Length: 204
Image (cartoon, rainbow, N blue to C red; front, side, top):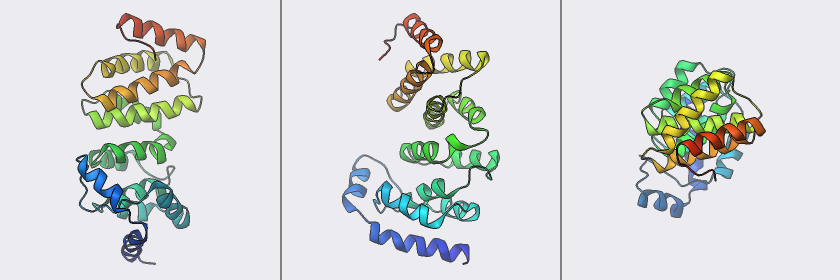
């Protein structure tokens, strides 16, 4: 099937998933998409499973300024096919915290170059980049990936900066990442507690 026709069919399928209360709730919180059907994540996951992994479809879906299209794009993009340059463009075009978090969970944590991207993002001055980076790093730690010595220092420095920053979502994401870091083992837990103590921050 032609990709554009497929995108059109997918967009029409959102009508059956429509949840006006979710869409209205997002609008009331200032989350503004050109089009937002308020489809739930389980419904979108079902749709993604039905579609399967498809690079060209993911690219086409991402270009649509529709909440559900962007979420589906992160679900159907094959992590082993997408180039870092494409991910850079997607990050630049990420419109909301919701899309940043879902992209981190659905796609970015699975990229072969996930650690490099995550460390670059937590060092960015942009809150959405930092948020995404800490979410990815949390997932990597949860999967047992241990940073090297340089990575440890870099992570702790950026986490402490984020924890003392202005953005509440970034602070929460950074603290979650610190907790996942501590879960890697006793040595990591000691490093985390010591760093937080020196910065007069509590370990939750």
